[in-house]
Image (cartoon, rainbow, N blue to C red):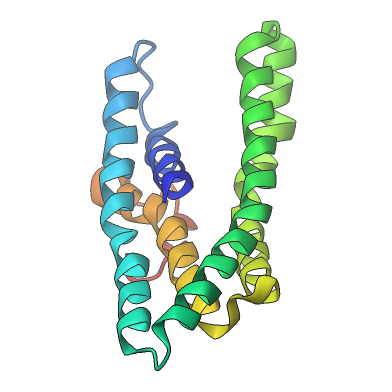
Amino acid sequence: MLLGLVDAAFSGFRAYAGSDARIRKHRTNVRAALRGLAVGAALLLVPALTAAVVLLTAADPSRTYNALAAGGVGYLIPLTAYAAAVLLSLAAYFFLPFRAGTLAMVIGLGPLTLLRPVAVVSACVGALINGGGWPALLVGTIAGVAVLCVEPVVHRRWYRMEGLHPEVDTVCPGA
Protein backbone atom coordinates (compact mmCIF):
# COMPACT_ATOMS: atom_id res chain seq x y z
CA MET A 1 0.00 0.00 0.00
CA LEU A 2 2.83 2.38 0.92
CA LEU A 3 4.65 1.80 -2.37
CA GLY A 4 1.37 2.32 -4.21
CA LEU A 5 0.71 5.62 -2.45
CA VAL A 6 4.24 6.91 -3.09
CA ASP A 7 3.88 5.87 -6.72
CA ALA A 8 0.54 7.68 -6.85
CA ALA A 9 2.12 10.91 -5.60
CA PHE A 10 4.81 10.64 -8.29
CA SER A 11 2.11 9.89 -10.86
CA GLY A 12 0.28 13.06 -9.89
CA PHE A 13 3.49 15.02 -10.32
CA ARG A 14 4.19 13.38 -13.71
CA ALA A 15 0.66 14.19 -14.88
CA TYR A 16 1.40 17.86 -14.18
CA ALA A 17 5.08 18.03 -15.17
CA GLY A 18 5.70 20.02 -18.29
CA SER A 19 2.24 21.56 -18.45
CA ASP A 20 3.29 24.80 -16.75
CA ALA A 21 6.07 27.08 -17.95
CA ARG A 22 6.47 28.99 -14.68
CA ILE A 23 9.92 28.79 -13.12
CA ARG A 24 8.80 28.73 -9.49
CA LYS A 25 6.18 26.07 -9.22
CA HIS A 26 6.84 24.39 -5.87
CA ARG A 27 3.26 24.87 -4.67
CA THR A 28 1.76 23.52 -7.89
CA ASN A 29 4.15 20.53 -7.81
CA VAL A 30 3.01 19.73 -4.27
CA ARG A 31 -0.64 20.16 -5.26
CA ALA A 32 -0.13 17.80 -8.22
CA ALA A 33 1.52 15.19 -5.98
CA LEU A 34 -1.34 15.49 -3.47
CA ARG A 35 -3.87 15.04 -6.26
CA GLY A 36 -2.07 11.89 -7.34
CA LEU A 37 -1.98 10.69 -3.74
CA ALA A 38 -5.73 11.26 -3.33
CA VAL A 39 -6.60 9.46 -6.57
CA GLY A 40 -4.18 6.65 -5.72
CA ALA A 41 -5.65 6.20 -2.25
CA ALA A 42 -9.13 5.94 -3.74
CA LEU A 43 -8.07 3.50 -6.45
CA LEU A 44 -6.09 1.36 -3.99
CA LEU A 45 -9.27 0.77 -2.02
CA VAL A 46 -10.37 -1.55 -4.84
CA PRO A 47 -7.65 -4.20 -4.31
CA ALA A 48 -8.10 -3.92 -0.53
CA LEU A 49 -11.83 -4.58 -0.94
CA THR A 50 -11.06 -7.40 -3.37
CA ALA A 51 -8.78 -9.03 -0.81
CA ALA A 52 -11.49 -8.67 1.82
CA VAL A 53 -14.10 -10.28 -0.44
CA VAL A 54 -11.70 -13.11 -1.33
CA LEU A 55 -11.07 -13.75 2.36
CA LEU A 56 -14.73 -13.53 3.35
CA THR A 57 -15.87 -15.90 0.62
CA ALA A 58 -13.04 -18.43 0.96
CA ALA A 59 -13.84 -21.97 2.05
CA ASP A 60 -10.72 -21.94 4.23
CA PRO A 61 -9.99 -18.31 5.23
CA SER A 62 -6.80 -19.24 7.10
CA ARG A 63 -5.33 -20.98 4.08
CA THR A 64 -6.42 -18.14 1.79
CA TYR A 65 -4.89 -15.57 4.15
CA ASN A 66 -1.59 -17.48 4.09
CA ALA A 67 -1.72 -17.62 0.29
CA LEU A 68 -2.37 -13.86 0.11
CA ALA A 69 0.50 -13.20 2.53
CA ALA A 70 2.89 -15.38 0.51
CA GLY A 71 1.72 -13.71 -2.68
CA GLY A 72 2.21 -10.30 -1.11
CA VAL A 73 5.85 -11.11 -0.37
CA GLY A 74 6.32 -12.34 -3.92
CA TYR A 75 4.65 -9.19 -5.20
CA LEU A 76 6.95 -6.95 -3.19
CA ILE A 77 10.24 -8.51 -4.31
CA PRO A 78 10.22 -7.13 -7.89
CA LEU A 79 8.63 -3.87 -6.75
CA THR A 80 11.32 -3.37 -4.12
CA ALA A 81 14.03 -3.84 -6.75
CA TYR A 82 12.23 -1.37 -9.01
CA ALA A 83 11.79 1.16 -6.17
CA ALA A 84 15.49 0.85 -5.29
CA ALA A 85 16.43 1.67 -8.90
CA VAL A 86 14.10 4.69 -8.84
CA LEU A 87 15.55 5.89 -5.52
CA LEU A 88 19.09 5.49 -6.86
CA SER A 89 18.18 7.58 -9.91
CA LEU A 90 16.51 10.23 -7.73
CA ALA A 91 19.54 10.36 -5.43
CA ALA A 92 21.82 10.81 -8.44
CA TYR A 93 19.56 13.57 -9.74
CA PHE A 94 19.51 15.46 -6.45
CA PHE A 95 23.08 14.97 -5.28
CA LEU A 96 25.24 14.95 -8.41
CA PRO A 97 26.32 18.12 -10.23
CA PHE A 98 23.74 19.57 -12.61
CA ARG A 99 24.86 17.83 -15.82
CA ALA A 100 25.37 14.45 -14.19
CA GLY A 101 22.04 14.81 -12.37
CA THR A 102 20.29 15.65 -15.62
CA LEU A 103 21.92 12.63 -17.26
CA ALA A 104 20.70 10.46 -14.37
CA MET A 105 17.19 11.78 -14.96
CA VAL A 106 17.32 11.06 -18.69
CA ILE A 107 18.90 7.59 -18.56
CA GLY A 108 17.41 6.55 -15.20
CA LEU A 109 14.01 7.96 -14.40
CA GLY A 110 12.82 8.26 -17.99
CA PRO A 111 13.19 4.57 -18.85
CA LEU A 112 12.12 3.50 -15.36
CA THR A 113 8.85 5.37 -15.82
CA LEU A 114 8.27 3.48 -19.05
CA LEU A 115 9.07 0.20 -17.26
CA ARG A 116 6.33 0.63 -14.63
CA PRO A 117 3.97 -1.80 -16.42
CA VAL A 118 6.79 -4.36 -16.65
CA ALA A 119 7.42 -3.95 -12.91
CA VAL A 120 3.72 -4.54 -12.20
CA VAL A 121 3.60 -7.65 -14.41
CA SER A 122 6.77 -8.94 -12.70
CA ALA A 123 5.15 -8.33 -9.32
CA CYS A 124 2.04 -10.29 -10.37
CA VAL A 125 4.21 -13.18 -11.57
CA GLY A 126 6.15 -12.98 -8.29
CA ALA A 127 2.89 -13.20 -6.33
CA LEU A 128 1.85 -16.26 -8.28
CA ILE A 129 5.10 -18.19 -8.12
CA ASN A 130 5.73 -17.40 -4.46
CA GLY A 131 2.70 -19.46 -3.51
CA GLY A 132 -0.05 -16.86 -3.67
CA GLY A 133 -2.08 -18.70 -6.27
CA TRP A 134 -5.09 -17.16 -7.97
CA PRO A 135 -6.17 -15.03 -4.96
CA ALA A 136 -2.84 -13.18 -4.84
CA LEU A 137 -2.74 -12.90 -8.62
CA LEU A 138 -6.24 -11.38 -8.63
CA VAL A 139 -5.50 -8.86 -5.88
CA GLY A 140 -2.07 -8.05 -7.34
CA THR A 141 -3.44 -7.51 -10.82
CA ILE A 142 -6.15 -5.18 -9.54
CA ALA A 143 -3.57 -3.28 -7.45
CA GLY A 144 -1.29 -3.00 -10.49
CA VAL A 145 -4.07 -1.67 -12.70
CA ALA A 146 -4.98 0.80 -9.95
CA VAL A 147 -1.49 2.30 -9.70
CA LEU A 148 -1.07 2.40 -13.47
CA CYS A 149 -4.35 4.32 -13.83
CA VAL A 150 -3.48 7.11 -11.36
CA GLU A 151 -1.49 9.24 -13.80
CA PRO A 152 -4.02 9.09 -16.67
CA VAL A 153 -6.89 9.85 -14.28
CA VAL A 154 -5.08 12.84 -12.74
CA HIS A 155 -3.96 14.06 -16.15
CA ARG A 156 -7.44 13.84 -17.62
CA ARG A 157 -9.12 15.41 -14.58
CA TRP A 158 -6.78 18.37 -13.96
CA TYR A 159 -4.14 18.81 -16.66
CA ARG A 160 -5.60 17.76 -19.96
CA MET A 161 -4.79 20.06 -22.85
CA GLU A 162 -6.49 19.01 -26.05
CA GLY A 163 -4.13 17.39 -28.50
CA LEU A 164 -0.96 17.71 -26.42
CA HIS A 165 -0.71 14.18 -25.03
CA PRO A 166 -3.11 11.84 -26.86
CA GLU A 167 -1.05 8.80 -25.76
CA VAL A 168 -1.99 9.41 -22.11
CA ASP A 169 -5.64 8.79 -22.89
CA THR A 170 -4.87 5.30 -24.20
CA VAL A 171 -2.99 4.08 -21.10
CA CYS A 172 -6.12 3.75 -18.96
CA PRO A 173 -9.12 3.80 -21.30
CA GLY A 174 -12.21 5.40 -19.88
CA ALA A 175 -10.24 7.29 -17.21
